[in-house]
Length: 494
Image 1 (cartoon, rainbow, N blue to C red):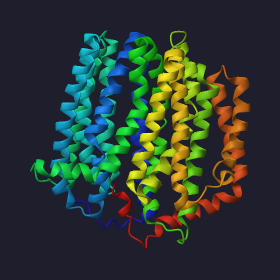
Image 2: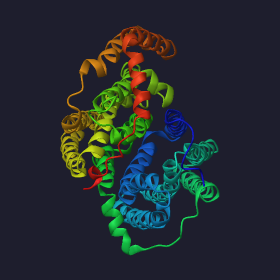
Image 3: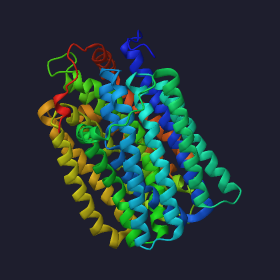
Image 4: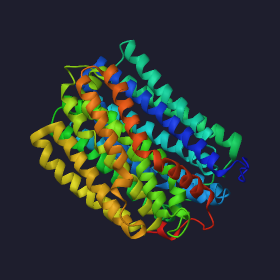
């Protein structure tokens, strides 16, 4: 069992764990994008569309089966390492039962809607793969609760690389999309084996005692996290499902190709959110630094990181799509990517504000706000997709993420007030303008535009932020050291 009293300084642990988590996400997203690119080029937009649709519907099942259990367990096991004995078996029992039942229901619905046999097979295989991923996540939650993210890296990265490797190998020898999905399942099962081996070898052997009578209480306890995840997946996946029902597989493929690039960037917001969640819990308005300052600083940090990514996706959409998927077959993806470009910035802001609201205010506020946004997203997609297809779905995604960010910031206002726009986004906005001006003349030459834009962005940002940078770093160090108050728990209750 790792020593819960880790002697390394808190700042060192946070930096190391964040770097390991981010590295795992980078590798995973890169492997996923490479696999998508091979599918797109080898099998075409229609087949890619079938794969994207199947993945979307099973990811909704994944959110229902997981239902926030991992984040709830992370909180409880971090406070009391012995909690793994009373939680581990039951949370896996819930995941397995609900995941298999949900996959079966989705398969039945897809069959009733008369989708081709290939789509049904993809739903079965990808559904089983995501159930396996859920089981792996239970072990990875224990690693994170012990602040030993190296074991998260060891368990997550091989699975992602193996899935991409098998899929690409299958495509190179002439295999089809169903064989690629079989490879996903094989890799996911291997991931379970690795994660459980590390858990039992390095951490603990949780009692394999299933108590179904406790499952209702566990689900109720994880409800604030679970509803956020379920409604979040509805926001992320409903557009793909509706596109599949109202348009062709090729349109779904074009949209999914652009959306995969967006998803490849979201690990930045997740990594920052994971790092600041404890600080949002224990800092107070009167602490030094204050909760407000740390919140503004985290918004500023994520904005600095996301603005250049958004600009690259917007200004260089055409050469980027050509490099990854190929033109002219994926010409429709160019406009989709431009609509999605600034959705990643809105998502990052809303994600951090949403975490603050979740840990500092009653959980029902998060559930209500997500429910409102889901209704908005569904209505907007129903209005835009029949007329504008994939581009309409992308526009709805942008509008939805902007609305969610505004609502989350509004709900955070009683806790931290209104963040200063100049403090949060002044430097990144000015540097972003310089970056756009540097890339526009070179927008057809990706390899020239990227370094020119990066130099312009970094140069202007450093000039603008030179005075405040030292203070921001000092505040971050002080926030990590300062922990005289325990984490807020009441806000976790529904």
